[in-house]
Image 1 (cartoon, rainbow, N blue to C red):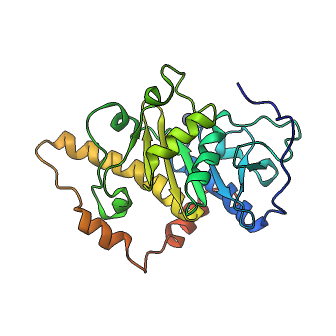
Image 2: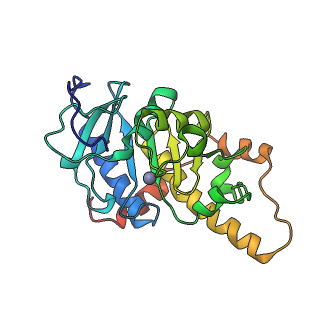
Length: 248
Ligand SMILES: [Zn+2]
């Protein structure tokens, strides 16, 4: 496992924006509180002044992360200043998505439980309510066997991360077969919103399936009308979610 420091540390992209890193800490704790992240999973943000750097906590459970845990990485997921801290094995998820998606500035990787069944069956995750219209089109499903044969399913290196980023394509969410999912956004609030409502959508879809009979999902045109709104306010749920966690 590649948890040790690389031979040559990359230079820093410059000082972090303290407010952005506070938002990253809040995102970790919100997603743990919302049942999206458990003891595992992680959230990152791209460096606001250096597009080729990103910030991610050291290897630690999301519910107890503080600002001191945040580390800077280059897009090959090498730490700028490791200070002996343990790193997430799956950090290549973040680096490779940032390489492939210049429009993405925040990434959530979770094992949110209700979503996983949709990654291992032929039932496709589809947008079932207006809050999850961002699941428009087909939600892709990353099959790590197609990328690297038999593995322990973790995204352990750049090859796995790049394979996942390729399957994600231009989508907002990708499932990871038998593992979890990734949700991305142009900012941290959007990525967190999508992670929460991907889990909610999976729960609602499973309930609709249990009721029996055909379900009516959002049409692509409805998804476009909803996601194209200019008055969407992610600040509102963010403020409520943040009020539930122990940091201000
Ligand atoms: Zn994982």
